[in-house]
Length: 476
Image 1: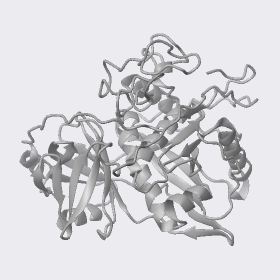
Image 2 (image 1 turned 135 degrees about the vertical axis):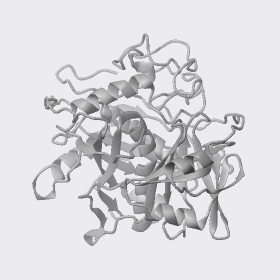
Image 3 (image 1 turned 90 degrees about the horizontal axis):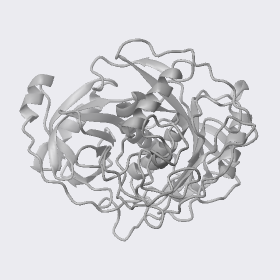
């Protein structure tokens, strides 16, 4: 990838669908810490265990989880921590909305404010700290809980089924969570588009993160949609769309809170059920689509009375040629660049097939935000410090075909999170001829990327990202 010679603004990253490949089940692990955790954390309840990797979330438990305040924690003695794995976990309630976030329906009659989602969102941490789980549910218990996680047993999705008034939750592989006969499609994008003729302003990097482990950064992500997403995925039901997007943010925070000490919060959001301003129909997502989105937001939401407070803005699009495919494109290392078309933007053509769960789209969107935060693809980034582009000494070598990056024989990683799987910014899931087909990527930043991005986050807090005092019982 190359940038325009007169610009210090890099080329965007165009990304294919994250594909899902079957993995073998890991051996069942003993879970002997449940009663100890309850004693340490004070009276936690237990979801009833059926077999390892499955638990009953009884009515009393999910009602208790729904009542805890944002920032407060609640222990559960036995909970699915992966396929065939159960153990103790402590869930903490999170707030997915920025304080000033507004949700708008944009239809033929104008712009109308609609309510936020009332769903409860929690992030869970296992007793050993190795597994994180995101869980979202309706406090009234009307709809099935949505959840996924990442840990030593690999990435997993929580399948939910009714048992009377309770919910039975089972951890399954991402492949097993797909509807029968559904195979997600992907097309590796031509990732060689150059940046527009734009010289990015020098960021004020003087701000530093306040001293002390109790502080974290918060990134406000404004959200836009096109009418294809609203019609094809939600049949223009704004309540469903509002809940889905809130769940999306909860799932992405599994990765961002753990690896970067950053909380992603949803900012002002536009749900477009009528004609929208995005005429470009490219698929997979292209630089032209990214520039169109940036042009519109720069002209309409970056200054004046209609300015939308944000650090980043994303377009959730339904322009994929199939409900079973997804792709994305984003600018690299673009903190708080809101006064230009090339800046803090990403375009995400997410899955519109309702049978493909939110965790799958969260993986796509989280990957694109990773570019905004400054991460290159692992096959194009130095294993020493994440810098690039480079074709030698890269974090992994599981993909070839991106200009200026690794060009040798694709091989699966021998180290790193979940090896031989790839990490969040990898293309290890892509098959021949350019990919090693290593299976589902782990929902983690590689440690090299995590260290690199933590430095960038610190340099941009509080000059761009908001600094937040996290709760005393915060994440490990």
